[in-house]
Length: 191
Image (tube, rainbow, N blue to C red):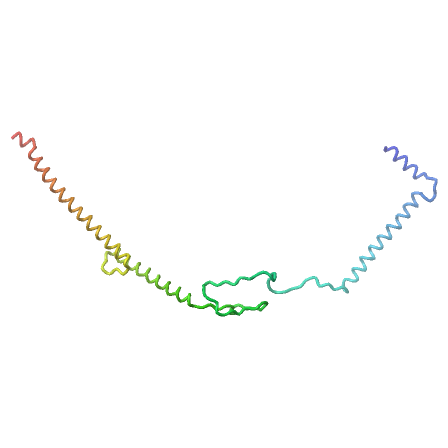
């Protein structure tokens, strides 16, 4: 195969046809390729020359966040209440500190009173616990701690009475044991 290619090349160079010679073929293709390159260079130069004349807005600047028109923006509050006044309109510019919604304070007043009541109850309980630690139970304010203190005092007195009864029983049994021990003492029996 390689020999065939060599033979074909040799035949081409030794062609007897004066029009289809290798030099004529190269000259024709060279002219076409140079014309293509010239057209491309000319187009690039025209494009570069027209750049200052053609104005295309490539970028735009604006402030804010781009959102869909169907996207809802939630407005939340830290407290609960009934809405009495709404100062919102579509596409209206708002600034920090603007009043958008007003709420009633009925629930807030109730919640404040409840929190104050709970606070005073907790303070009374802390005061009573400090009195219990010191052993002063006569000025307790909270009923729950008074009940617990009375329950504790009754259990304490019950246990003290059991201890007293156990001590009496122990003393009696000790006396009986000592009498029996003296009676059965072998030293006295031997004398």
